[in-house]
Image (cartoon, rainbow, N blue to C red):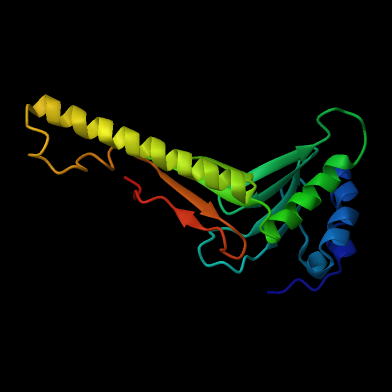
Length: 193
């Protein structure tokens, strides 16, 4: 059911910090202003913007919590706060810029998975994320080759008697890159264990 109340009516019970962020959020995303909501537990604001890419699990999320702003995309997020206590709103400007950078694909989500699921994730530039993606793939290949060699030695088998990639997925995680329109999307070759 669509909530037809105005932004002011919906946001009247926001905490002071969230209320301070609202004008910046409305100015940054006027086309989504009517979708700004209030977290029912902490009176923080939240905005979800659906992503056009089908490979993304979660679109752009903008939330306040404990005097900070969280910008989330897919499985990763970044936090912005007045870490230096200078009392300015610079961190709010930086958060809105980061949100726009996600949509413009100047920031992408990179996530690393292990046997239990997602192990870590972050937002970074496509160049840095792609470099991290390739480093992760190279490290996974080295681990895979090490595990395969160790298994062959323990079994006392000649190197050619077992398939070359035996154990390849045993010690190898998965890495994904996700961008707003899918232009920078990538998946490592390994599946989740």
